[in-house]
Length: 97
Image 1 (cartoon, rainbow, N blue to C red):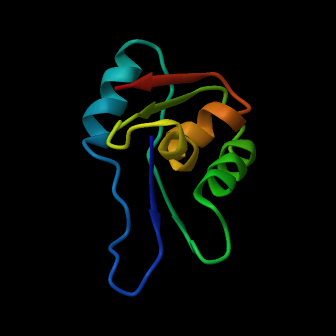
Image 2 (spheres, helix red, strand yellow):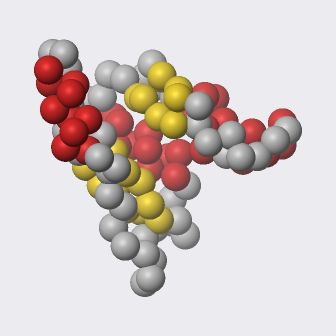
Image 3 (cartoon, helix red, strand yellow):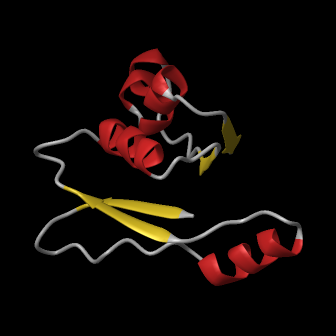
């Protein structure tokens, strides 16, 4: 379970929401999972590049992510992290909307 947030002077570290309960639930069903926080400097790396790097470094074999759907239209989809993930991801993806 991964929480991502740009680093900054007034930003708190990203916290995976309800990670303990979710990890216990997954373990009850035979799925190994762990929680992690990923801070990144948005002035030096794009969120999609940092996510792809993290997934490669951790040998992830699946990405499950929420898709907020707050922006509409093709141009907004190209700018959104969800749109970039769908276009560039190197592992299978399960989206929750």
